[in-house]
Amino acid sequence: MLNIEHFFILGILLFSIGIVGMVSRRNIFIMYMSIELMLNAVNLILVALSHHYADLNGQVMAIMIIAIAAAEASIFLALFVMLFKNARSLDANFFELLKQEKHND
Amino acid sequence: MLSLTIFIILALLALVSASVMIYVKQPINAALSFIVTLLSIAGLFALLGGGFLFLVQIIIYAGAVITLILFIIMFLNIKDENLPVEPFKVRWIIAMTLLVAPFSAILISTVHSMNFKPLYLENFGSIKDIGMELFTEWVLPFEMVSILLLIALIGVVILAKREEEHA
Image 1 (cartoon, helix red, strand yellow):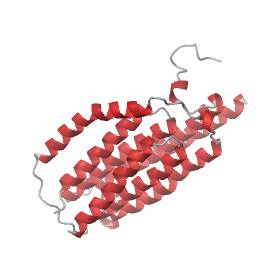
Image 2 (cartoon, chains in turn orange, brown):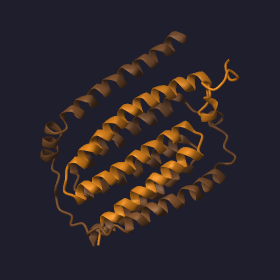
Image 3 (cartoon, chains in turn blue, brown):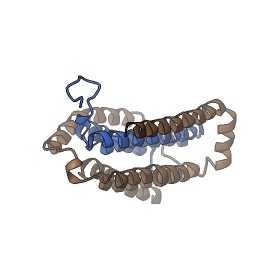
Image 4 (cartoon, helix red, strand yellow):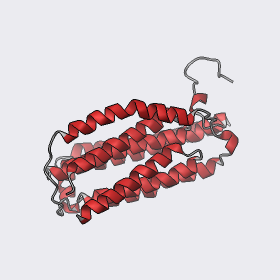
């Protein structure tokens, strides 16, 4: 029988996959999509809890998270376009401009 | 029993396509694989009685965010030499999986020990109920999100404009 526990386990696994992708890859697009994956895992758990307690606040919170993720997407992609125009690379290790002056051209 | 079958199919789709998404080299393949993850999560929302969230997930995530990502990837005209060289990618992924797995196992065993009752799937959370909730209890956060979207819009315009001044 379907249980809320299944949804929790799926959300935990998706969140872990997101963390693994965020830390171990250096392509900024894939890092960004890993962040979105973690947000979606949290949304899934919120909606599952909302169904379990028959309380709509969880679904409204998930809608708020989706709206904030949309705002985040626009900022991220504008930044990616700028960084790619400056560096011609998608490597996250390349963007250490705040660290020291050694990459300053 | 039907709902369990649907859940297993959607969960496997989501997990496999998420794993493919963090593994592939080309960002466009990752974005296409991520669409599958988002659509299966949308299906899970529908399974949980969130019809409005199902629509919002498909329209905003799969329809707007991923389309924007695909558009930017095509617009940047990314060649192979622009991609980062990742010789130790597989080793990093295996090491991080081994590092994260114990925490996931602890969380899963905690959830397992909570003994939830089985779900009875009924239709709750219609669009009208969500609208009533959103415009009575959640009015202030709703307006703040609209201000946040406006600030994001202005920020994007300023970022793009500053780039033009440099060139």
